[in-house]
Length: 262
Image 1 (tube, one colour):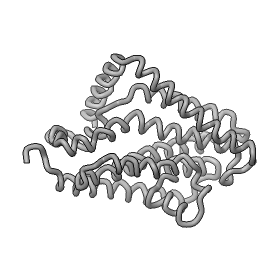
Image 2 (tube, one colour):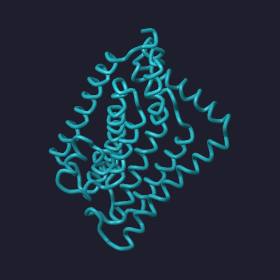
Image 3 (cartoon, one colour):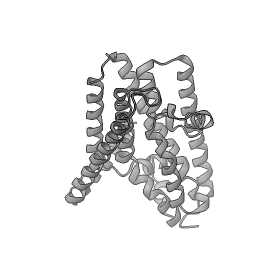
Image 4 (cartoon, helix red, strand yellow):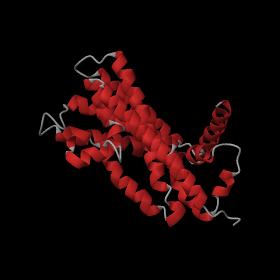
């Protein structure tokens, strides 16, 4: 574990030094990320100009939910997004060989090598929005509930990683990553909406097969209503299944990979 932490510290230092070489791009991306947060908050504010309840939640609850998905989005943009972007190129060009021969997990190397410094500032902003949303909440939120909420948000970040990676692994067979990426982002839109807005099969899919509802919406539900044993078991089972499927799918993909030397 210590070796992986030292390695990741080198990744971060290298990414920071490279980001500072293009400062206009760095600050422009920070501005765009901040604007994305503002647009989403305004979206919910406009909706609540015409209703008092949306998906069983009030405006104050919706702001907390929005802060949660801001954090999950900022985490994936900071730590994962650039790496996911390059993954199909590495597979198609045979550059994956470089990662497979390293004495560390290739999935770790591929997933975390690039660190987006500008998005890290967006993560700080998202955390500030969460603190503000909890501080302004009209009812007291127990510290234990907030800690559980943060743990579930961290679990949501891990789920986001698993689902996104599962969508990319088919590139080993179809050799085209653009369509897979677009398909994932089409489904990802459900992540920024409370799962209770949906009914029937759609809601079931969003909390099981494509668990975008578990990434930010269910953590907010637990914060407001508490965690039941059935819900805890469900979240644990879906997370374990997602990670198990990712590990199996990754191994199958590597077996189908044609390296540059083959």
